[in-house]
Length: 320
Length: 276
Image 1 (cartoon, each protein chain N blue to C red):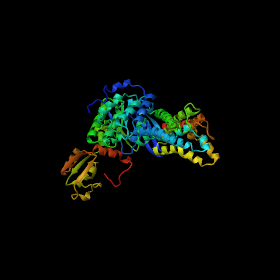
Image 2 (cartoon, one colour; image 1 turned 90 degrees about the vertical axis):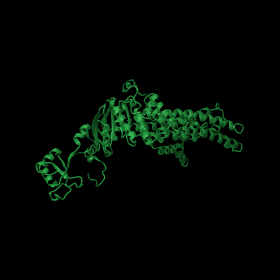
Image 3 (tube, chains in turn blue, orange; image 1 turned 45 degrees about the vertical axis):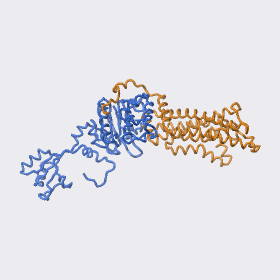
């Protein structure tokens, strides 16, 4: 259980996190989602006592991280897999961490086996590949067999095999009743691993919801229609209260107007009405339809829609 | 692999865990120190140059003794000659001490360390203690070895010293103690400055540059510097003979320890307060 109350972090005049409150429950993978620069890492650093909150507080299992008697036994964390001394052998790296929390040496061998690094345990950390380094970081998080796990972008740099392994691991950890917080800037990644979502943008909470609910509430549904009488249909649909835009084949964002009747590509996108209603309306007016397709926005699009206003840096001139 | 259990007994065996202690952090820091190559090289330099340079200077000075002036003979200090390699040793210890913590900052390891041990003062205390003990053992060994090798080379060519002579045992032991205080000062400086290059530069300035500059100053400025500059004052413990405008051996060493304590306290406070 991780609980944050009105968490604020300011660096000078920059607000990294503002009034963030949440509680992360055990037994489910919680995806911590937000564009780059949204404050995910800063929040995690505050949970782990690396950064002091400007205001507010955050606790793990009811206690502030710095007050945990044996932190690694309660919280396992991977913020940055490269945060280690490159000249130290993988096994020694894990050993010094284990020792600092009174974790027996035998556990080092266990986690090395668990992440599949027993073959390179004697290699110095700088000689490990990106994927192996990530596995070493995960091994260090698992050392204390903790009830709470925090991973910052754990699949970054992993090959497909490694990505699959991490996803399975996250779900296994959660199914064992642990609290698992995983950050990502990719909605598609979270859709595959997480059961719950915490979405932030520009340091503020945007959504705290289950993945299913998020999909249901925010995916914009539309209806794609092709018709030789598209302009007439568009007019009828607007009368009925639907929103109509020129279809995707024309790529124009401007609404269809009556002037291009018969000459346009004949494709329109309708929102605010489902495909059955569109079909009935067309039939009632004797309008022929050559295509009628319900379109569901992907989770990725829903996420981008949600966080569009809070993206720190946006490429100029890109319209969607 | 994906089917492997994360814990042999499941999460429930967590109930058995005990609180982490300072002794745990000491063990951890010892593992950190012995598991990087820079430790081996710096300590090898300390021992080899500390003894070897002392031996070379002893041999050369002893052969020149007969031809030296009366004043040269009067100020002949066989103990000081035999342990003159310790200056290089002090540089190696200072660099290693600074790197012991600042390399954690440059690599990012410090974040991993502070997540493992969020009671940050423990990390600094354990690092300082482990490094001080290692330096004390290596320093005393080097100092005594350099003394005996040096005296053996001097004997027969010039008057040599014995441990029983007044002040000699204290000076030889003092050379190791001086390195030990320097070790703690270096770890504190590394913690304070965080950047390896900056911290090493600061230690070189404290050890060599500023005392060197002081030599060029008028007496009214130079004397208080040679008297109270921490490393100058501390090094009085390693001298058999007392020279003008310097503190007595133990008070001098006290000044160095006091300075180290102040730097350590600032480092402790900043480590605790700063975002890592």
